[in-house]
Length: 266
Image 1 (cartoon, one colour):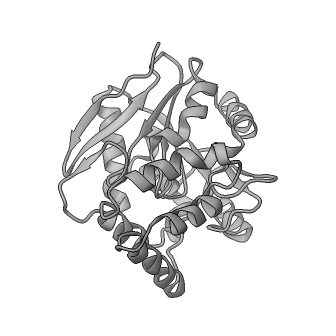
Image 2 (cartoon, one colour):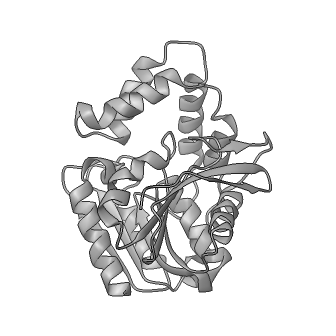
């Protein structure tokens, strides 16, 4: 079955997603900041048709439209559950990379019986420190400003994605041709998110965590803390020669880890 690209209307958004379809266990994936659901193309190709992969564009990204009202990651978690409700799906493995992980954790907290498992790639349950907030705000101010974007975008691609020119170029093309001001509300959501570390113990479904060894967004200690804080069985894997978006640059290694995790759930 081919990938379907429908929309679901929620309170505050018209949410775009892709769906490989099929009767297999459902895996829902949320993308990282600056990216969109296309970052999971290799996972959709590698897991389907045995598994049904649904990838969602968050508000501010891809083809999802929002109403211009501020939102939180709890709102984005509700958006994701609304997509599954519209598809008649009761339970799913929920996951994501970076901000997609923020969303997945909140999905599991909002509806524990519906989360069969967690896939967390380069993410955290904590809030940013004041220093980190200042740094990210400076980046976002520059991103939405009037100075040439290419130098900043090239640096971001190197830090976030790494890998080869072939890995980075599609995202550079999107960034340089897109609306630089579109990310304002998404940036506020990212920078001002609250810590949920005190709630992690309530998440008791099995989890697999993946980190690129050179990830500059979240340290090894942060991901160990996330792994240890979860209330269910959780395993952390480190992928050599990878940065933040490890599933883009190292799809074979990540897909193998996900398949082993999903097979254990089966």
